[in-house]
Length: 332
Ligand code: NAD
Image (cartoon, rainbow, N blue to C red; front, top):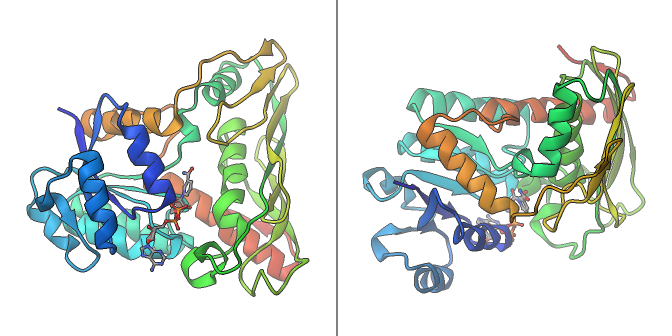
């Protein structure tokens, strides 16, 4: 039987996931949680969802008694994830939570603990962790084909529009570009290098303090040092387009992806030539693989569990601390 999923938050990304799930073999959309009755009605007819599987933000704890829903996919603004995930866990359902899983590592850890206590699985919506060209570079690195890794570059950014959107609201977003897009360079560095960073340095540039209020980062460049001697040099921004590139360099070879994280086909090459793995909609592969993780205990090549989400948040906490103090931050 498939993993039966309810989506919480019927916004632009929730819609993208629902469309992608039409092609899933192991995951099926069976419920919705939304504060907007008109969206519920249109999703009901579009995805054939019975009224008994529809909830709002006040009554969704009752999902506990619904045998047609195995997991809830939380796709709401970042600042809401913590409380919503803990409520889902208490209702005894598995949780998939969008990135960033929370707005700091402390909140993330509380979510991990709550899911553990409730004996439900917690996964973070990291879709690149299942992308075939990405995984080919990870395989080459693991098999030693790139040699000793010494450098990673990650460029993650786009120019953000509407200044009134939740992504530019500290309360709902938890920060700025780093929370939203810089996080791709952070976990990209970790799975490409295959180690955890031991120090962070970071510098912030803000050209528009009107649009990017205190606590909402516009542009941060940061460096991460790894125990094996590799260094990652990364840029996170809400003020430049055409920044979506990963480059990993070892003493025997290299891997390069550009675009590295967009929805369209990922393009890339290595020292051996073009990467030719076929493109499948990222969210379709992700949901089928996550169903296998939850239902069969399958081990993904690159982890997507709550602990993995907390590792990224610890790094984000350290980046913000490095920006604030101007000092190098050591990580344990
Ligand atoms: P969005 O604004 O399009 O949708 C957010 C939804 O949450 C809306 O339907 C909104 O009505 C609902 N919502 C519930 N309570 C709200 C409140 N108090 N304030 C505002 N909205 C509220 O945003 P989105 O682009 O769908 O992003 C949602 C989440 O998905 C974010 O965590 C984001 O980082 C993540 N995301 C991930 C990817 C990815 O590739 N993995 C891509 C886009 C977004």
